[in-house]
Length: 230
Image (cartoon, rainbow, N blue to C red; front, side, top):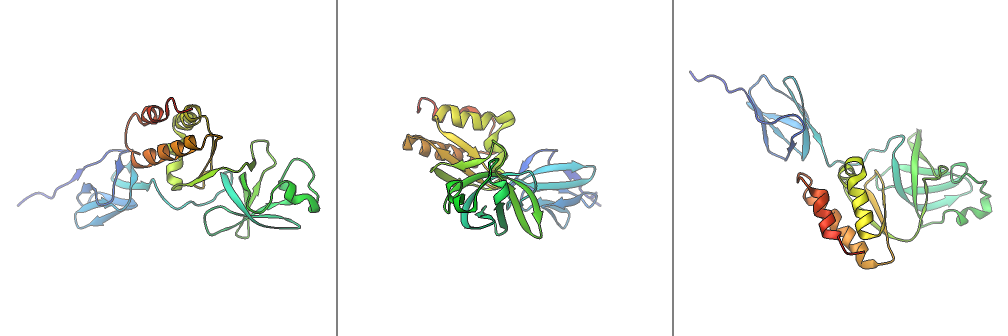
């Protein structure tokens, strides 16, 4: 009689794709986005392996953005009233910027549009969740209204790769293109540059990052792609 196969095909932090065989044998336990099919455990998503003993877990790399306190995000002003502004942050949740959180300065109700108007893009921080409505703030000097620019929508799971280790990738995008690039954890990437060609170069670089998430030396590839295009 053949012995039952027991084999682990991946190691911790490996990147896996849908349908990839991760382990064989009933002694291994699927978790996260891993599933069992008879004796085999496979992945259902593009994700990263997290092995704890005999538990084989797949943590998705690309997934729908889930807002949480402390996130730095980009939103678009869609409406305003006497109490503040309502933002679209790319997911079906209510998001509000209250009048007292709009600036370090006092904002008069009649002068709200001088700070933020309908259609404006704003860089803000999530400061809480009140009865299902996410509250954001622009009081810190880091946060602000973004001038008219180009907004790129990516999967929120790609944001850490666009930022890179210790900011290596985002710094490369800025330095080599000469553009102002602002990253929102909700999957919005804002690009502003006087040279429209360079804006499109940044967009192409982000597509390169998106299609080569598992590649090594990706920062250098992006640098080579953008180099000399200032």
